[in-house]
Amino acid sequence: MQLIDLQAQYQRIKPDVDARIQAVLDHGRYVMGPEVEALEARLAEYVGIEHCIALSSGTDALLVAMMALEIGPGDEVITTPFTFIATGEMIGLLGATAVFVDIDPDTYNIDAALIEEKITDRTKAIVPVSLFGQTADMDAINAIGERHGVPVIEDAAQSFGATYKGKRSCGVSPIAATSFFPAKPLGCYGDGGATFTHDAALAERMRELRNHGQNAPYQHPRLGINGRLDTIQAAVLLAKMEVFDDEVARRAEAGARYAELLDGVVHTPVIGADCTSVYAQYTIEVDDRDRVRQSLNEAGIPNAVYYPVPLNRQPPLYSDVAIPKSERAAERVLSLPMHPYLEKADQQRVAEALKNALKK
Image 1 (cartoon, rainbow, N blue to C red):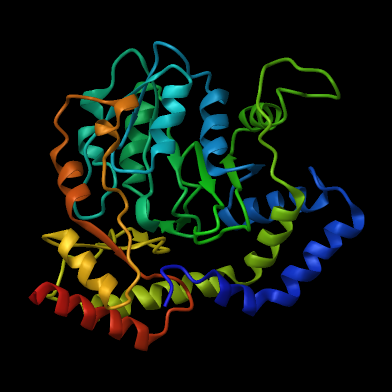
Image 2 (tube, rainbow, N blue to C red):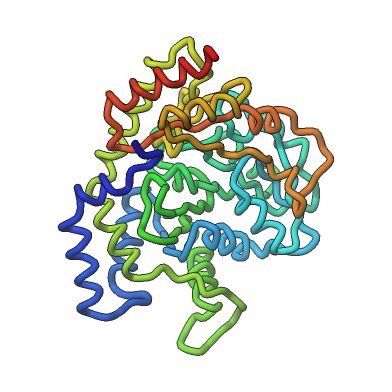
C-alpha cells in the first residue's frame, strides 16, 4: 500500500505518457516547446479563465504572482500559518511581512471572518490556501479584498480540480497559483506549477517575470527569474489531463468510503457546502498522534503529518501572536493513504488498523 500511488497511475497512462515524452525527444525543444503553450491553453480552458502561465514549480508560481503585484519590503501579506512553508517563504523572500490569520478548524482553511481586522494601510495581498483539496470561503475573501483594494491570490497548490460554487479552483480569485509537484492531484514527473488570471496586463507581466523579465529577445524591462516549465513536464501533464476528471471522481469515491468507514471513530474531513474536494490529502484528527502513528507503522499503513509546525512557529517567520486553532491542528492532524487507485479493501485495512491503534 502506498500513501500516494504514482506507479499505478503510470501503468494506466504509460503508452500516452511515453509517446508524448518521445515526441519531445524527437523535436528537441526542451525549453518552452510547443507542449508548454498547449498545456497553458488546456489548463485555462479547464479552469474557465483567460490566462494560464506555466512555471517551474508551485513555489515559483507564488513568487511570480507576488512579484507581479510588486510586493516588497514594508508590505504585509495576510495568509494562514497552517500550510507548507512556501506560502510564507515567498512573502519573506520579497522582504514583506506575513500576517497570519487563524483557521476554520473544520476545513483547516483560513477563517474569512478574521481577515478584515488584520488589514492595514500596508496590506498588499491576501493569500488564502486551499488546503487538503478544497477552497476557502472565496466569495467572502474576495469581497474583503475588493472593499479594501487588496488583491487576492489563491494558493491552490493542493486544490486544482476542486470547485467552489460551481467554479473551478484557480478561477475563483483575481490571481491563483497552483503546483504540479508529483504528489499533487495533477502532478508531473518533477517540479511544475502555474498561475492563472483574467487580467491580460497581469498575465503579460507574469510571462515576462518567469523568463528573466524578458519581453523580447534580450530586452528586459524588469528583473525576473528562470521560472519556465520544462517541455517534458508539460507533455506529461497533457497526458495526465486525459484521465484527470476520472481521477478526481475516484478520489471523491475514496473520500466517501473513508467517511463511512471512520464515522464515529475519528474527526474526518468536513467539506464546505459550496465546495467539492480533490482530497489532495485525507486528513483526520487523533489524540496522542505519535502513539497512533507508531501503531499504524507497525501494521504497515502509510501515513504522514501535514503540517507538524505552523508557520508562525518557524524561525524565519516567527510571530508571537497566538493562533490557537492552527497550533492545535498541528498537534493532532494525521493523513491517511489517498489516491485515485486506492482499493476498497485497502481502505478497510486502514480503518481496522486505525481502530486498533485507538484502542491501545
